[in-house]
Image (cartoon, rainbow, N blue to C red; front, side):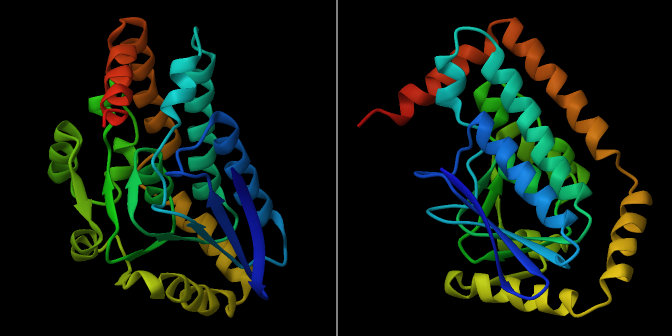
Length: 250
């Protein structure tokens, strides 16, 4: 697994996640991602961050196998804290963050995208929260930033996915393009932002966050409390194992 950062052009930092096979991140992976985004934003030479991924999809959430291998709750607590850190890093980044999404964007991926400033996606991108099928809760906070309230609830309760085209209709995805054009589309948008006076853009980021009607940090941690409750009740472990057993069947 690697979380790498490079600058293809002046003012643009690209943070890339590569965690085969499906970009399901371990506890360390979430904290590494948070650190990479935070560091990019702190660099005065960075005017905008592009968050992207390699492989089959953008993000498949937490590494459930890591949680199941832990006889206690350390991995679960770490995953929840790591997700909160990564989501917060995107939201609180000193400069705008553009999420470039391809393939599947599930669970924690929705948390990252929902907290991004701008989202561009490939035509094959799908977004969803399978949490209720895994005996967990979380990221409804972020899905609610992508779709209207009642649609969010339907998607959440049914663990259904929604396409990039549908999100574009709702205005939460800025552009939908063929997969081979996704990176260049994100870079083109990043160039437009990077060309502005970064002092103004950084102030704008603070101002926009300051008038946000949703307390994203508090509401997400509130959701996570119910995940702990479900784990303590013995509900989550069985749901996670059922998912892993089903996935490993021929």
